Image (cartoon, rainbow, N blue to C red; front, side, top):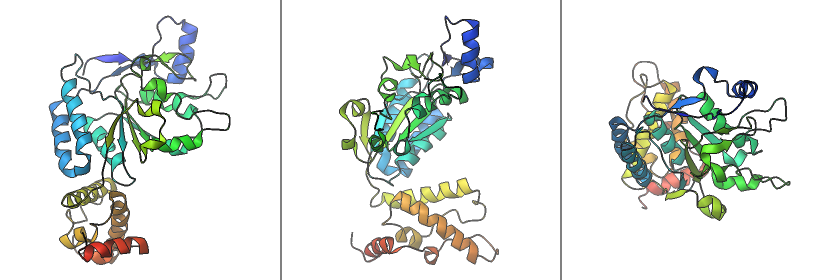
Amino acid sequence: MDLHTCALKTDGFGEKNLKVIYSKFKDKPRCGYRYLMPANKNFIKTIKSLKKTFPNCIEFLDFVEDFACLSTYSASKAFRLPPVLLNGPPGIGKTQIVKTVVKALGVAYRQVDCGALTSPAILSGSANTYADSSVGIVCATLRDSLYANSFILLDEIDKARRNISSGGQDMLGSLYSLLEPSSNSEFVDEALGHPINASHINFIGTCNDITLLDGPMASRFYVINIGTVEGRHHRAVTSSIYEVLLENSGYEKFFSQNLSDPVLSELEALSPREIKTYLMRAMARAAKSNKKTGTIKIDVDDFLFDEKITSKVTEVAMGFY
C-alpha cells in the first residue's frame, strides 16, 4: 500500500492560491495525496463468505469478487469498482450489503440520502463567492479519508428527481461527470474552484424503481437486480441481522448468540428491514423480563407485531407457502 494518488491537483497554482485551497481542504501536511487500498486475499475470502449470509445479493458479491481479482493485476493492486446500481424493493438489504463490503475492505464510507437532497451543493460544494462556502461530500470524502478509493453510496437515487427545484436545478447534476471515467479525474468542487482527482472513488447507487431514472443517468451504472429473501436462505439472513445487532449494540456478551428455531420461524415472513425493527424491540423486552440470572434468550412471546405484520406472520405460520 505504498502507492498513492494525488486527490488534490495543485500543479501550476501560486502560493496565495494554494493557501486558499488548503484552507478548504485542511490537508497541508499530506499535500493532497491519498493512499490506494489494495484488494488482498483476505478481502476476497470475506466476499466469498458473505454469499452465505446475503444469498439474495450473490450477483452483486460476484461482481465485487470479479473486480477484486482484476485489481490484483494492476500496478497498485487498488480495489476499484465501476459505478454499480442495486435495484430492488425497499427493505431487502441493499444498503447493508454495501456497508458490509466497505467494512471488509477497510476504507471510508459516505452515504447520500438522495431523496432528502435539497441542493446540488451537497454533492459538488457551494460557490466560493460566499464567505461560508463549504465543500461537497465528494471532496469531503477525499479530505477526511486516508484512501482515495473510498465509497460513496447514493441511496435511493430514484427519489432524487422529486427534488429538482423550481429553478430547474438537478440535485444529481454533478454525477454525470463524476460517473464518467473521462471527466472524474478533473472534478471541480464549487468551494475549491480547482480540480480534484475523484476517479478512484467507488460509487454505488441503490434504487427501488429504476424506471424513475432518466436514461443518461441509468446508463452510467452497471445495474444489478436484488430480489427478496425467500425459502431456505431466510433463516441465514435473519441470523446475520441478529449477529450485527448484537455486535453494534455491544450487548453480545449478555444475549444468546443464536436465535431459536421457533423465533426464526416466527420471522420468516418479514423483510430484512422489518426483522431488524422487531428484533430490536424483542431484545428490549427480553432484557426487561430477564432476572439477570444468566444469558438472555429471545422468545416468540417477546415480539409485538402490529396488525399488518401479524397477518403476514400468521399466513406463514399456517403453512401457506
